[in-house]
Image (cartoon, rainbow, N blue to C red; front, top):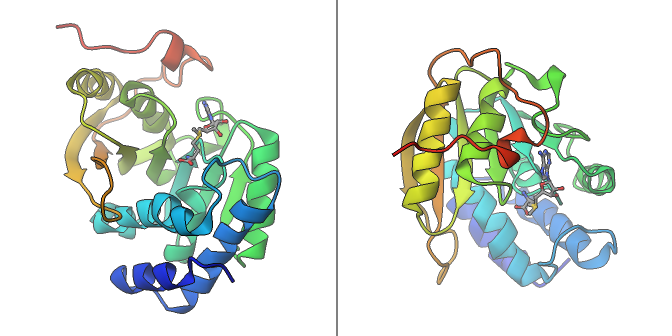
Amino acid sequence: MTVALPRLEELVLVHDLPIAAAARLDLLLERFATDPQAPTTVTAPREGADVHVADSLVALEVPVVREARRIADLGAGAGVPGLVLALALPEATVSLVESVGKKCDFMARTAEAMGLTNATPVARRAEDWPDGIGVHDLVTARALAPLTALVEYAAPLLQEGGHLCAWKGQRDPGEEADGAAAAEATGMALVEVRAVRPWPGVEARHLHVFCKISPTPPRFPRRPGMARKRPIVATS
Ligand SMILES: C[S@@+](CC[C@H](N)C(=O)[O-])C[C@H]1O[C@@H](n2cnc3c(N)ncnc32)[C@H](O)[C@@H]1O
């Protein structure tokens, strides 16, 4: 057990999760603190309770996140938000898409330690994952790429009517305009930019939610790396 347990108990109450979820989230923070392979710089459990767990759970404020059943968390890293959402949403299956194999190994060990059977690491790049095309109702991404790339990665992986939920900090009109251009090109549309406050004193935090409203043109996904190298940008 870590010193973060009381804060985790608060969080599970706020989000209407079973109280037993707190101890399982504590196991996640314990692994971040003790596993030398943990791919995160935030390893102190009390800080992790806010920066990792509260920041992930805040997305449950978005109805389409709560209702999702087939989720792909892109650039999952140490498993945030994917492992946390898998615990919060036991009826969903979560693919933890991460291009670095060692990080996938860490997530597999951690999912097992947490007793999660609905979260599976996928050692692929988001834009090079044929089995993921068109089968998700939710794509999540935190700290992965600019919005334009996130929209381009997400669109082919979503069913029509599915959503992207992207975690971002301060609002950035230039980044948002490029995200809108990518949405226009890939069959997506912005639904909302929701200001959230996952923990007291947090700097500006926003969830950007897009919906896939029409088929994604067959030229997507582009070759790996292209969404970052030659991003879709706003023209004016
Ligand atoms: C900064 S980390 C963020 C990890 C986690 N989402 C979080 O918020 O703590 C970004 C992760 O995305 C992975 N990544 C980068 N580009 C990727 C891609 N195209 N497809 C899948 N994973 C990618 C990196 O290996 C890294 O683990």
